[in-house]
Image 1 (cartoon, rainbow, N blue to C red):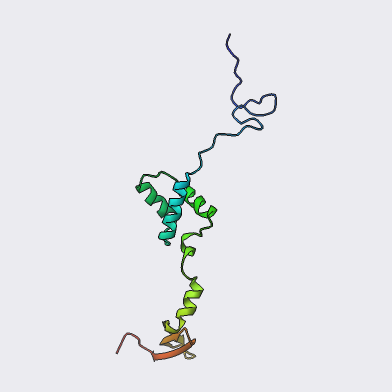
Image 2 (tube, rainbow, N blue to C red):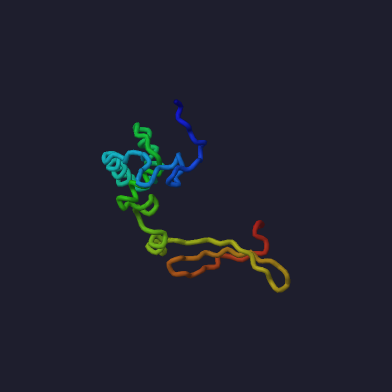
Length: 144
């Protein structure tokens, strides 16, 4: 005698669809990442502080390990390793603060006068002292 099958999407007596796991049952999951692979990921991240998860995943793929970038990210995050730009070195604010005495910015701007004329000026700004130095003003910046 043939077993009668319900059409797909039908519910059983517990109110659970056939294609869904029953209460207490678990779906099959991917096996966890091997500890040696996690250690290798952490070693690559530690030795190459500018590499992100995509770069580490690419290097692992080149070596024969087939894992996703998200797996690399999860391994780094679970170990407390920050993303690549924040892993080493100072922040941008710290970088500028320590090097402000040596940074000079040049700005070429135009000034509108009351007589509807236009003057062009070249200004240099020292970040360490926050002083601006006027290098020159001219009406015709392209001529001698």
